[in-house]
Length: 345
Image (cartoon, helix red, strand yellow):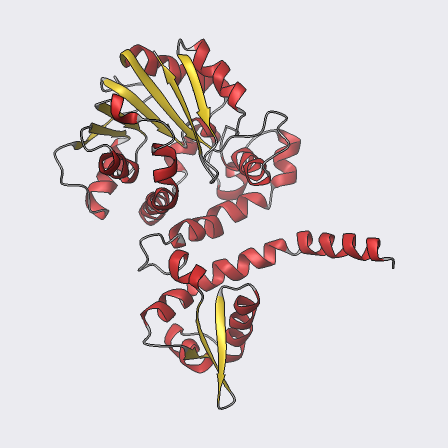
């Protein structure tokens, strides 16, 4: 085999085995490896980890050594025995005690997203999501039954808090939002983005508008901001009257829906928006030729297998927003996963 052929074969092997890498990460999160190591006074042996987590000792060793190769863990030898500890990446992003933990999102991906991706080929054949075949959820009930239990709803809402703990500042400072004193976060879940918005723009007042069951879960399971400048309002943004605001935030909302539903929502936002007000759309933007970035392309395929929507280019969003009546379109690539679009009424 020539060096060129060897390179391509190795690349092919990396791609084909990529799901195994994901599963190592998911399994270590589910078992609580990173949490245990974060709480321990120092590195632990295989036997200590296996005993504490109720796992097979020889199997745990294989998982830990794979995590070392993936730089998820580090290992040191003492008297012929291996002691394992978290790397900086795991300490910051994989232990639940970290304020930037991504563990809930990873577990959501393991328990939901991963299974839908097993039907990607069929999704491409049919051009529609695979929830019905994967979980028995009809398409018309997708966004009410997407959470198959109360626990899954809590986990997903926590996952979104984790996303904004890392990406929130970048998207909220892409433009000067101090010009908008009255803000409405549509589909704002447990208020994580609203909290960050208030910390950055302390003069604003924010309404988090979401479905009644989402608001209920937020009140029962999350420590909600006690500041009088943030309030929660129940409602369906496709049906109910929207709160009046200077600025509407739609973060990871439009990518869930086909163009027709997006236009319907944007027209409702435009009608409710104060004159001179605006809309902030937060999404992962495709390049104009739609051939990158790779992560956004993968997210768009994820929208295919899980939702009715897609990821879009800035010009695609421009068309949707302008058809709803918005003007003065601006967009900014933040350099992280999510980008920002601002348009005015």
